[in-house]
Picture: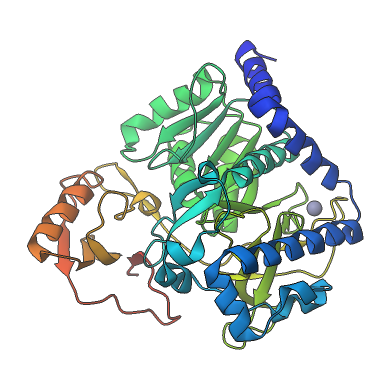
Length: 435
Ligand SMILES: [Zn+2]
């Protein structure tokens, strides 16, 4: 073990008086548990959360009452489908006064927001206890992918993820994809070598674009594992990435609401999710009937966020929940790769990598009520905005922001509109690529 990796391990071992370490060991113990036992823990945690939400969150009290759902009479997961579903719009419209839990110490609220990959963002709160659990679950996924604690890891994003710490005790690095150019490819590869990166975490479209360039230039590199998430991972992309980095690629599913939900095992039969942390369902889009082995919309409950509960929360993603078990030995249930959020990373003619994942127009200003980027066939980028306030002022601010990402050879057109029309599926994706 390298010295820095050892420091990272030590730091994690004793972080928050051993809180992290205890949580990690507990989570690892679930990996060897039979499904019935996991389901029992899931039921207990669900019941506790439902009662907490009813007693402390006005939004859920009203919702449960209106639906005639009584959490005190919740006796088994068979009754779970009678818990009313919640949408992002409902949570946003209700406001924090209604959706934040009472009786939770202020220091447990960690504010966050969803990235703008579809529609408008949601500003929400995470429970600090959930943050601990989330960090441990991520580490557990790394371990499952064959990486050791303290092995250097790089996270590729436009902006650094919230809460990511860098320094002597940390071997997780952040690398900005914001201004990624062809000439910088070699810098990036030497960064990976210099830091002896063993695990890369990034969006499939970005990783695939880099891998393609590596193939063109005849460069290869070896890492232990690649975690690809945030959008759909196509088989072609997986192959490309796998070859360029001589490394196994693991598909991951995470929600914009700050939750890492599921990841493939090394048999790649689907993505496993931990039923002691989440309840994952797939529902029929219209009737909200529960579907198994059939594609529908993902609906989930985060069993660990008490600060602002997400209960039977409808996601914008489509997937299949599998009834079959995986032969890898892990009894965590399986879901398919998520179908949705197909974004693109493209190399422009001048050799700049455009990664639409990193375009988050809501990051810097609260002057928008809607946003959509359209990449036209002729290469022009049309940014449609629904401005709040002075349209000319908003247009100028958006243009300035986008120019930071786009080089001058790209034609940019910022257009103020009254609303963003939904596509065929009823969604309002942030990025549309005309083909
Ligand atoms: Zn498996």
